Length: 316
Ligand code: MEV
Image (tube, rainbow, N blue to C red; front, side, top):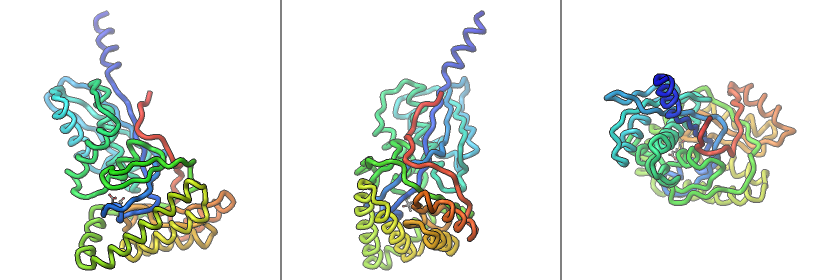
């Protein structure tokens, strides 16, 4: 009888949460320099299960995540803040791999903080989860705006300024996006540093591009709120051309973007740091099939994903 009770208590101590991946709609790179971006959370999720273990070391089983350091550092930061001595086991599962650039590191970081806060019944606000996650992100990557963490934490579609200076939910519905994966894994910190190098040597040119991107983000924000897809698409395409000028696009992404536009998309652009990962196209339902075919024709892989998804949440 005692054994049955012990097993029951242990089972009850497992906490399961999930956080969404993301797609950057506009403002890539400029957001690192203090300009706004617009990000949407997607329904491909990263799941974290947390439990207390009777061991001297924490245990991490995280095959979907590129670097288990994100989990380890989140545990260390959490335990230090809340003076916790117990060891934990974190197990992850994912709807997506870290190869496609949907943000597995940010999702696992936010989900780990959320799971630990529930496991130890800690008093932590939504905002603190974002701030601690951003601290971990900067410690590991040294660069980054934190937009991906905001998407993982709050979900939906957000207007965002670096470090969470502004995190504003946009009142919209899901956007009709087609997502194409280039088949090339992008090295985000490499491209962020590449832009930083160029920024040092061509300050005026780069700042002028960032300001033009900012103007597009502001117009896109209004377009989203007014459900004006024609304008939003135009702003996205213009944003892609500015990212080309920053030197972060690659021929494969350009071909996918051009193919989507030719096939009738309202607009299209690379999404994220560039150098690979995904592109997005804004498409009316009538043109979806043609746009998907056009992207596939130039070698892109269509990723079926919905956007405007929920932020971090408890799973049963
Ligand atoms: C990378 O997905 C997007 C960048 O703007 C970097 C960042 O905001 O952290 C290039």
